[in-house]
Structure formats: C-alpha cells, structure tokens
Image (cartoon, rainbow, N blue to C red; front, side, top):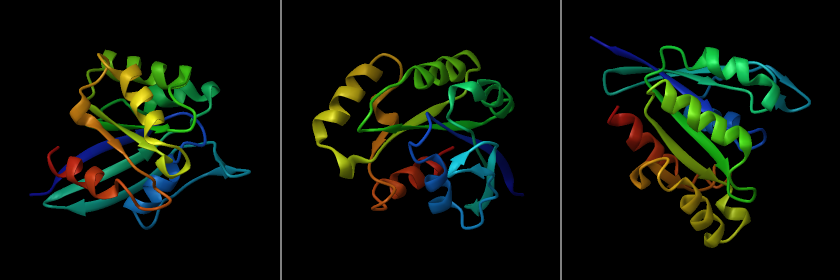
Length: 157
C-alpha cells in the first residue's frame, strides 16, 4: 500500500522554492505574477512506496495566511533560505509556525554558488537552537547541488 505524505516547501520570496519543486517534480502546477508565486505550487512524485504531495507557498509576508493553511495536515516541511540574504523575519515566522504545529522540517540554504561558505556558517549559527544541524542542507538549485541530500531526507520520512 502506498503511503501518502504532505510536504510543504516554504521560505521568503525569491529564495528558490518553485525552482526546487521543479527540480524534484517534473510537472509543477503554479500560479505566478511577474515570476513571483502568488498562489500555492503543487506537484507529486512517487518513491519507495510513498506518494509525496508537495505544496509550495508564496514567500511574500502578506501571504502568511496561506502558509498557515498549507501546513495543516503536513507531514514534513522544507524551509528554503537564500544564502546571500540570510534569515529574514518571514523565515523566523515560518520556523515559529512549524514549531507551534509540531511539523518536522529541514532547512535548505540555497544559492551557495553566489556567496562564500561564511554566509552559510552565519545562517547556521543563527539557526542554532532553532533546528538540529543534521536537518540543514546547503547547496544551489541552479547547479543541482544539495538535491540528492533533500531526496535522502524524503526517503526517511
């Protein structure tokens, strides 16, 4: 029997949430305005007797209500951060939301190809105490770096 799991992809705007979903799933349904997601992205894949339903949320602060709706019934979440920007208020709000709802999550620090390792170290230090370091992946969606680690995390859910 196939186990169905709801996975939510979250983060501030322009961090690479939709691009991550496009790399994990080939046919992502999305609604964009001028390249920015303004609704919920959706896609699904099957792997190892599991069907993953992915929901990507808009990153703009004004869409906080959509994030709250999207996490209802979620089995897992990925918080995507931009290594060139660091932790934003929206990201802290998302961490608080996921923690309050007791939803396990991992952090993907994206855009490592655009900065140096010290950016990631600073972000990881800021995340210290908020999330286990084993749940942090660094990479670049553009260069396909970190995708295999994300897939590995999906396998253990």
